[in-house]
Amino acid sequence: MPCADVSENLKVILDHDDRVIYYALSKDSCSGAVGKPSLLKKWIKDRPAAEILAAGADDIHRFYPTRSNTWQFLYAKHLFAVQKALQAVLGETTGRPTDYCAIHSVTCTPDGVEILARMNIDLMTEDIKACGNCGCG
Image (cartoon, rainbow, N blue to C red):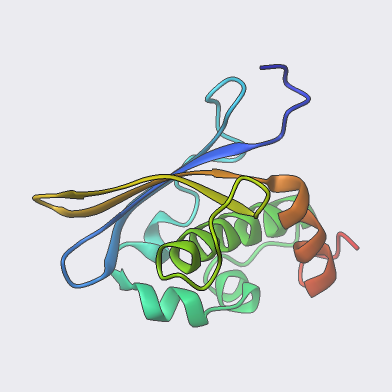
């Protein structure tokens, strides 16, 4: 897959209490991370799914203050990716290949639930620009 493909793979693991215990986001074409694979790790670890769904980019930017538009965009992208995956798993969106988040699999494990998805970053970028929080628009 060429580097022009900006789709990314997302892995989210929820424990049995619906808390995110792990997530990682990486480019589909080379498996490399843009920023870091778990950029929001300190904010997201052990946070309930409902709280993550209710969060906005401002919440992330307060936790990770930065003056760089690039980093603000990356933080928002990670938040939106996890939110879109949770919404798809909860049935709030379809999780089809044409959606922001195309769910590949949802697997129950001894640790909880593992979600694997492909993220359409082009669609997500438009929402991030529209929110106005990163100064990208």
